[in-house]
Amino acid sequence: MTIDSVLIDHIVVVARSQGRPRGGMDTMGIGTGIALVVIGAILVFALNIDTGGYVDLDLIGYILMIAGAIVFLISLVLVMRSRRVETVDRTAVDPATGERVTRRSMRNNDPIA
Image (cartoon, rainbow, N blue to C red; front, top):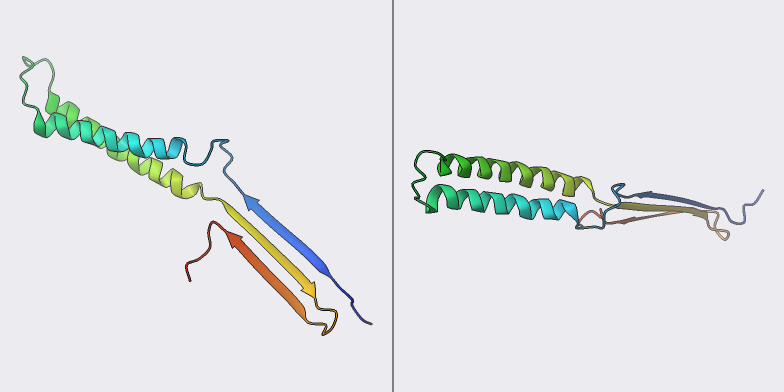
């Protein structure tokens, strides 16, 4: 019994299901988080305005810095989770030698060699 040629293709594609273009809302959240931290730090450390006791600018600044840090961390987690994976496995039998040959290709998550 001889096997002339066998070719099996296996393709797996995992993409983001949010329907957003790459680098969209997630990176905007990172920028928004940084902006909130900067505005909060300006309110706390750079401004010394007396509002007559109605508004505590230091408290608002600290709240903005905490909110900015939370937005930044959540956006960073979402960017790391939304990586795209594309894997291709090909198995073939060489007709001359009868040896099975397997080729594996990965994109976007290739390990650094």
